[in-house]
Amino acid sequence: MYVSARADYALRAMLAVAAAGSSGDGEAGDELVKAAALAESQDIPLSFLQGILLELRRAELLNSHRGTEGGYALTRPAAEISVGDILRAVGGALTSVRGLPADRAGYHGVAVGLRDVWLAVDGAIALVVDRTTLADLLGDRTPTV
Image (cartoon, rainbow, N blue to C red; front, side, top):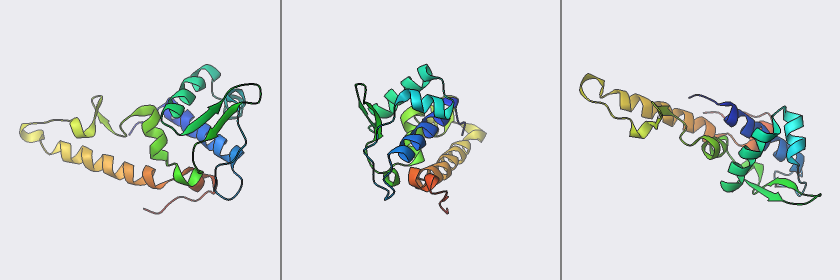
């Protein structure tokens, strides 16, 4: 698994939105976070972040509100948004082989067993990232696997 800058930035932005909007009870809060504030607080180039925020909105992980009082908020509680949700929203498949999702890798002859290895790797990664939520990370709790 390769964690791109885009994936890292998306996770950091979502954590910042979750932290700012959290009402302390794990529910999504009403506070909106501006893109410029996210960019500054997380040291992410604003123009790059805006594209990431658009992808997160399209994946229905963020709501956006326009205007001077506008900004971004989570669509659901931080405990219901996993790291895997975010990674898939901005990067597609968790594991790729030669640019294709692991389940589409094809081999023949002596290499036929490699597909099973890549699928097992993909499954192990999915197990960790799908069990880890924004709330876990904000609470500094790492799930046990």
